[in-house]
Image (cartoon, rainbow, N blue to C red; front, side, top):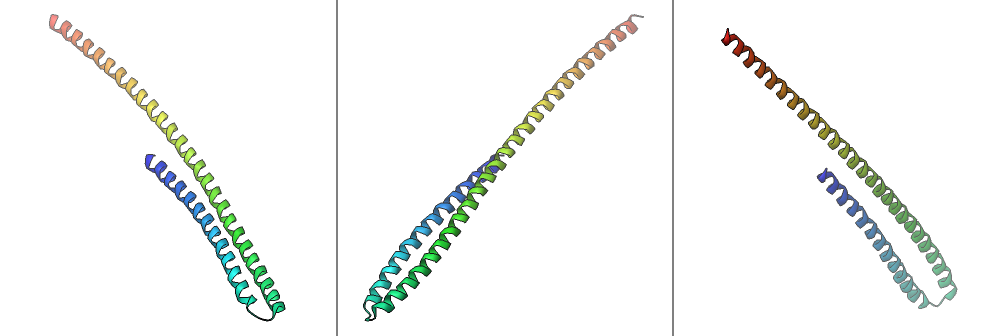
Length: 142
């Protein structure tokens, strides 16, 4: 149980670390997007045709915005899935711990019953030994 609990705790920590990593990756992607957009503007402003620049820039921004929105949705979906998995694992861990406690209680009860039966058997043996000694004494007395 201790190994299972420790394993579940490590798994829980690992899942949390993955959520943090995904959040960091999303932030880096946003920073990358901002840098890409800035470079794109600088390159396009160098050209003479400002109307073409405007059209291309709008298309690129729209494409990147859609991509970023899609990746953001995917990252959020992965985070929700991981959170659901963490919740399920926590429930499983609690169930396993409860089952373990129940088994421990059953084992303790079984041991107690065995001890009571052993003591009862020892008393019966002692009583029978006393009876045998009494019969032996009667026999010897005859």
